[in-house]
Length: 335
Image (tube, rainbow, N blue to C red):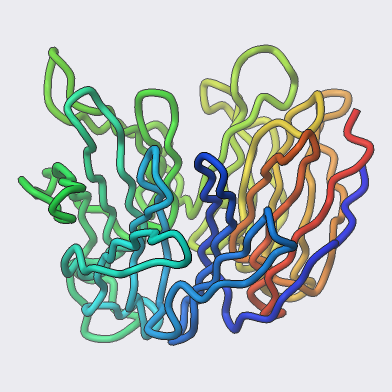
């Protein structure tokens, strides 16, 4: 499989990424984690760059609002993890660019999501801490917050915290009917409310985990899971569908960060990247019952990645944070 870089642009400390696709419009959006811009790139117009916002930044998460070109995003998640001024904003597409309104203040919110259900949209937010004396203070653990997102009013109603403390939350993965949330205490499954009960949290793994992705690597109809183990690495672990270990690496991927799983061509793969030392961006497949690693690019230090498809061709979008580079790779020979 071949990854050819076909586009790059400079964005200091590029971090959060997203695709926005609705009707005749098609954008990728990339935001900085520092006091820097958020850019949208028009996939229908030769990657024309549009400034969504020029500064403030500090963006960890961006979430599309279903059926629109609007989205919600965190801002002011800085300095480092001492982010008491973090907020969530809504960006409203006006036909040319985006108008901003503030949803509210959400201190220390690192990951969040909007979950569609018959009655509207649930809000799920994971804070990395509840309070901090300094960046390295983890004495007051984070929380999982839930509520109802009112898109008309651009606010979260009925906000409450679950009876649970989560230290060093970093990862979040929306699955089919539930979400996976990671932290120092391990990997958790968050089930949404239904006729049988309220929100439910179940621990699946008790190892400290930074991030998680899923893909059916061995094509047996069941997911495998790639986990970055330890806060920001340096290990990766691959689990089977029951969270039994298939593979664990040595401590050779420091500051593990970028993670994605899904179909590329006719098979499923993981993409993984780490931000220290070699700063590799890698493809992980499965061969003869073992993971197979292939280098995509080194010395780029990716923060987040995703694969998208346009007109029958697949592309990899990577926020190459340590290189201050937004990059798009065309994926070829995918059979």
